[in-house]
Image: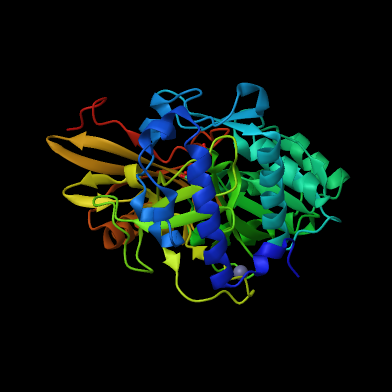
Length: 432
Ligand code: AMP
Ligand code: ZN
């Protein structure tokens, strides 16, 4: 029923394993220059249960930057075989290095994740992620091969060739970024193919925040089951938390990671079930262990047990990033609140962008929304009504009334990788 024996571990077994592994991680981490000095006086005998992890300090993105490139390695460079880098566009880069063992364990985690989403070795998987430094390429690729699937490393872009490969090789599983999935579904139809007739059954969607409404849209447009896949380069890449076939939150693989959820302001754990910042610790990576990494991603633990029987705790879909939030007219707003409203409206097309602008002395939001072709009729009154209705629904959700600009379908440029949802124009243009 499961791919890996540790998936069937009961809570008490997981707790015991995590405690043992946490101690080993700290011992190992101390061999690196960074943790060697940070944890010099820390004695692992203080770790009596996995909950004692709170006695350890956090590691931040800035730490990784300041230690770039080798400050967190626990062994000689000769032992490493692979490097990936986070796709962040701000600041200096952070790089993660992997030993052969680390690559093998990661591939096994990925294979397990795919199996949990119902993928089997008889499936054919096409990976539409960019290969290269981004972990969504090789990470998914190695996992898929490990599971035994025929794996098509299509890479990003070139929609026509993607469609041809899918049809020629009966691709049953797609790994696809949600914003690209929406665009892709539209392109398939434009190329004259009926998405319902495509051989695909399963889409693994992840790498960027998206709402339940977006998932449903992808499932309806593509006639596919879409499973949420969460990961980040600092924790290897994909395969950190994954939805099982129940589609009710993502299981964190707790034999390989410890997950915590904290109040980003105080660093304290939030009450069970409440939303906060996800903090992650690697339990099995030997070459470059990372302890209590502040992911900046916002989520919550889903209370209770999953119907699939796995006791690995589930996290909810990522609600956004701590740094995604913007404040307009004194109100805190997350892009996903806006996406949720837009994607629930049938007239709205597959893409949107949120612009932060300045009107006089006030900050304001302008939401550019693609409208489906059928709705983009000549009659101005219809469009005006739609514009008003979007604005008022957004106001109900975010408590300020944004400017809404309706644009033609396919007119907002689609980036190759993760979608850019918020553009800050406040210092760029003055609005009257
Ligand atoms: P990178 O390390 O460059 O691949 O980026 C990792 C980041 O992508 C995470 O910290 C999240 O912000 C985002 N991310 C990855 N998977 C998901 C997902 N399933 N849902 C929402 N955001 C995700
Ligand atoms: Zn489950």
